[in-house]
Amino acid sequence: MNSNSNISPPGQRLPYGISCVGALLLVILILAVLGVGLGFASIGGNNQATKTADTQHIKTTETLEALIRVSPTALPFDEALVVPNATPSQSPEILITATYSHLTPPADDLPNQSTLRSEHKPDEVEQPAPFPLPTPDETYSLTQKVPILMYHYISQPPEDADKYRRDLSVSPNDFKAQMQFLIGNGYETIDLYDLSLAIAGKNELPPKPVIITLDDGYRDNYENAFPILQELDLKATFFIVTEFVDLADPKYMDWRMIEEMAAAGMRIEPHSKTHPDLTEHDRDFIIWEVLGSAETLEAHTKYRPRYFAYPGGWYNDEIQQIVADLDFWGAVTTAYGLSHGFDDRFEWTRIRIRDTTAIAELADMIE
Ligand SMILES: [Zn+2]
Image 1 (cartoon, protein in one colour):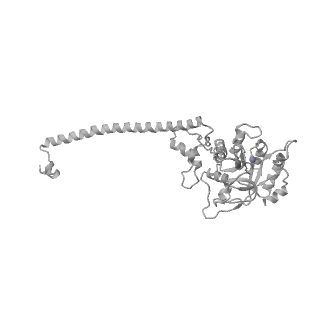
Image 2 (cartoon, rainbow, N blue to C red):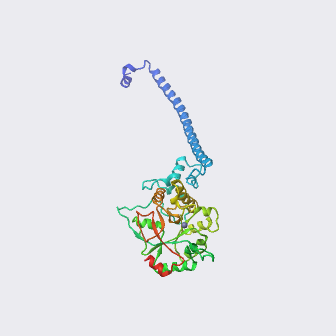
Image 3 (spheres, rainbow, N blue to C red):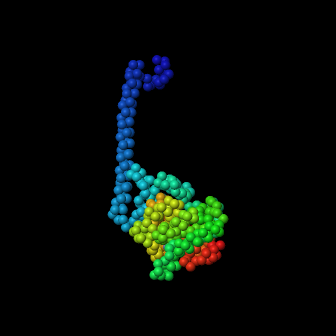
């Protein structure tokens, strides 16, 4: 028993050696039974947890659906609530992150928004940079001199056209001659994404960059401008009024045309849902017009557009702030100008091309 006395303090020594072994076995048996019991309990607990999460998911989804169902018009973010390609297997957290990620201000340390969407992007189409707003590394940004040409109709106006319609029209022949002039004089088309990156010092522009924009999404843009741009290997940006397309107004391009142009490398960006004067509306309505048109385009082009063209060129400080809060990278106006910087990115100027704009005048305006 000497060995026992070495192990156990005298006060706790058991009276009989055999009972000691028996007690030990009994303890092991009790522990084993308890262990199995705990194991079952633990599995049961997991099931319970899974069930709770599922119920939570269903509840959350139902709540969102109910909100949309009960009051579709009361929700300015109705389209934002519909996450493209969201599957029932996604957790509520992922749904909500994806839904509201657009509403958070850009920050370098945010989880990359594009990772949620990357799987839905077609491989063959070059996509805009997926990262948040390009910001200058230094305290200063690089103001860039880049003419942003502004077109509307690319067609011969009808005989009875009023002066406004004529003013907004450039014939296909004139448009082609202007594009050929740009090429012949060393201009290279870039897009607004290239401009943002260059302003932030993240890329280099060609020696003579030019941006071509076409507003309103008229059908002649697809029928007349798009073939010329493709033939000459030029890139352009089309600002679309999404509800005109949704309502299948024959004056405007349809979704098939817009999707084809996007797939061919043209940029498709929002110009509101209904082309109102945004300065006459309240915040909720402005958000509905700006975010709604962007989300609608995203559903068709599979990338989140980052530039807004103010309908009619009407804007004010509040509208600029809303566009910034909605995580846009910039916006274009209808005012004249050639230089674009970081601080004025929500009022970049353009050069209006009219039916009367001769090549020499175009050359003067962009030099
Ligand atoms: Zn317009």
